[in-house]
Every structure is written in structure tokens, then in C-alpha cells.
Amino acid sequence: MLAVSEVQGQQDLPSITLGFSGPSDVEEGDTIKLTISIDKALSSPLEGIAVYISQLGGSVHDGSYIKLKEIGYACPGYEDFENDRCFTIPAGKKSITVDIPTYPTTSFERDAKIHFGVRGGLPQYYYRNHYSLGSPYIVQATVRDGPDVKPEVTTVTLRVLDATAKEGSSRGAWLGLKLSKLGVFPYGGLTAGQSLRVPLVFSGGQPGTDFTLDMIGVPGGVTFDSATSTVTFTGPSSTEAFLDLRALDDADADDETVTVAVPEPVASGITGTVEGRRRGNGQIRLIDDDEPTDQQTEPQVAITAAAGGTEGTAATFTIQAHPAPKTPLPVSVTVDTVGDFGVAAGSRTVTIPTRGTATLTLSTTDDEVDEADGSVTLTVNAGDGYTVLSSRSSSTVAI
Image 1 (cartoon, one colour):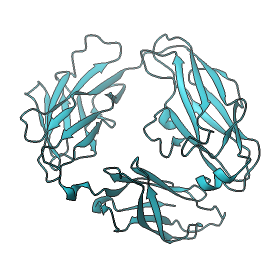
Image 2 (cartoon, helix red, strand yellow):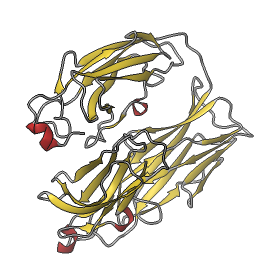
Image 3 (tube, one colour):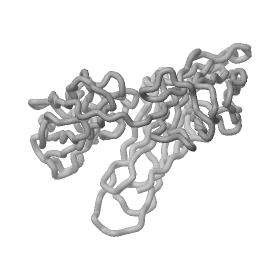
Image 4 (cartoon, helix red, strand yellow):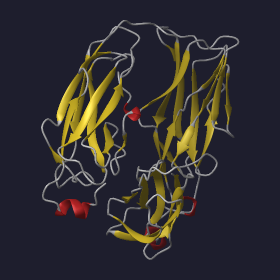
């Protein structure tokens, strides 16, 4: 991405327009070909082109015709905005064509409009002021409902029923898992010879370190393995299970937010497909009962995300300070490289703004030479005004 200082100094920013290189009226299961264009080719890649994508109408029972996470990549600085997806136009190119796959539903649904709109393009949009808006910058495609089929789909849905757990309290947060089967109501659960393992994955905190996790009661045909945080339904089984999450006491005075998710369950003896879903954001607040001290006000800096993977694609690192600094915080980092991909190794300074998160983008070059794979490693160094979270002080992107 062009540096902000460079962009602000330019008088003639590249202008973004949207269009379609194929039909804008497709049947579910077909592919929409979205074209993102600029008015002039650039000498360096134009990264971080943000496009808001949403579905208007259509499938209300079986989910969306599109899957946002399969399109583009999460926008730097706006990772929590699920409908915003980012794209890159390579150096020397004036456009790219993005394949937007659509997915068939399993019942009769209304046709839908898929809305595409360029985000940003104005000076006040941080990370999005390195281009301007052309015409058109908003387009729509139509997805028509096609012939419907009725596959067998067994779903386990995760819900957070009580989203807070306080240290030292006998009352914790509650998680619920519910089995259902498409087109079967009421669903009686798994039958003999069927089993379903449902692992729970946590971020922002881990069982045994930040909290405990136990099953509530003894539902029929359901067991819980606390070592792996896995719930197993074995037929004949109940259709529901509930878990109690209780915060463990720690030495700091900070509240924490834990997020729970369900990856793909592991099925045995179940026909059709099996999928895990989460209702809501899956967040649980661990409320601390310690009094804050002066020593605990210094921000702790960590590398929370990294992306990249091939030469010619930038390696990006997200650096976070918690709590967010009251004034911009200079942080010393070191870049180490393996291989020759155009990234300069050495020390540099990243400034974390008062919102608490900064992104370091390291552009790589595609020299079209067949060479061994390499890597880019970012390490946060100790410095004044902050501490470093040792478990997240370094991150490597394979190139």
C-alpha cells in the first residue's frame, strides 16, 4: 500500500471504478466476475482497496448465496468489519477480475441483489485515503434462485447464553450446543452407530490458564473432554449440551475478552454433511476483581496477526498495545529475512496510535527467479513506555 504520507502528497490519486466482466444476472451456483479498475497503471501494487459486499434479500432460511471470507482478504485496520473485503491491483495493471462464487440454497428462496461499493476514497478514511472514487464505484448483481435440492445436513450450533464471568464468583458464563437437521423437526438427536465430536476453539484466553470449562449436568449420550475442550455426542443422544465457563483469578487488574468458535465437527456414521455454526460473536467477558496499580497502566505490546505468503504479495503484521496508549506510542521492532524478496532487514520504529493497533506492511518483489522459499520475521524489541508480551513478541510469514 502507498504510505499515507506519500498519498497525501499526491495531487492525482488513482481513481477506482467497479464493473462486471461477465453477466451481472446469474443463477445460484454460478460465478459473478467483479472487475476492479483504476484509471492508470502504477509502478507499485495498489493494495488495500476496500469494497463493501452485502446481500439484499434472497436466502433467508439456508444462509447467504455468498461467503464473504472466501472473497479477497480482511482489510488492514478494519478486520472487525466483516462485510469489508480488500483487494490488490498488481503493479503495471489497470484492473483485476475477482471471481465471486455463489452457492445454491436447499429450498425455494427469493432472488437476491449482491451489492458492491468501494469504501473510503476520502482523506478522513485512515488506511483508505490512498485512492479516490471513480464512476461507477457502486454496482449490483442479481442472483436468481435455481432448482432446489434437499441434502442431508446435520448442524451443531454454538450459542453464548451468558456472556460474563467474574473472578471469584460461583456464577460463570454459559455456552450451549444444539444439534439440528435440515428439514427434520422436531429432531430427536443422533441414533445408534452415529457420533459427532465438536471441538471448541478459544482465542484471547485458554482453558486451564484463564478459565475453567465444565459440562453442566449429564445429558444422555453426551461427554466432555476438558483436556481438549471437546464435546462428543454419541447416539442415541440428547440434542443439547451446556457448558459452564468460570474465570480464574490472576495477578493483573485487566478484564479480558475470550472468543469461542466451532471449527468443522468430526462425524462418524452420519450421512450427508455436518457443519458447525456460531450464533452471535462468541465473545465472553472475563471480569477481573483486582484493583489496578500504577505498574499495570503501561501498555503491553504484542503481534496479534500476520499475513502474506508469496513473493510479490506484501507481508503484513498487526501490532497491538493493551491497554491502548493515551498518546501515540513509538515501538522498536526488528525485521529479519531469509531469502531475497526485496525486504530490507534491520531495525525500525512503528508508532501505535491511540486506538491501540498499527499495521506494518512490508512489500515483497516477484523477481520471476526460481529460488528457495524464504521468510520475513518481525520481532518487537523492549523499549520505553511499554512492555512486550513474550508469547507474541515475534511472528514469521513464509514467502
